[in-house]
Length: 144
Image 1 (cartoon, rainbow, N blue to C red):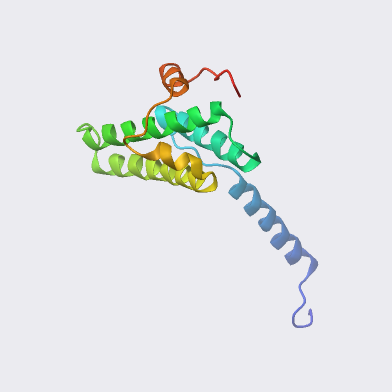
Image 2: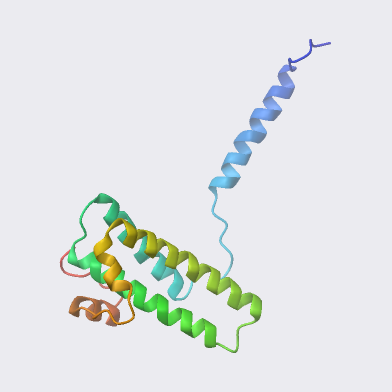
């Protein structure tokens, strides 16, 4: 018999093993089918790139353009999802939730670099770099 408050060696190993298994399972990202297609993953990548750039210091014009294009495309995608009659209510709610998450990332990014807040408005002028990037979202702007 083991004194109170102490464990047998086999029990400790079981607890340690299950804790490491839990860490591994939480580190794996669960990807549902269809989550990696469409405009949302592209917007998410752009939002994270700009967020990272803001954390490193003052934004360069290329990242400002990327931020502006991401906000424009996010706005368009939100309107498309809202008007799409082929989506079920559950699918629409899921897409809107994902878009809201991206909007939150962009809003937090703008809060860190307040010069970006101007670009969030509906009446914000679209820069030439943003227009070029919007035409070809997979290209890299010249002045990174």
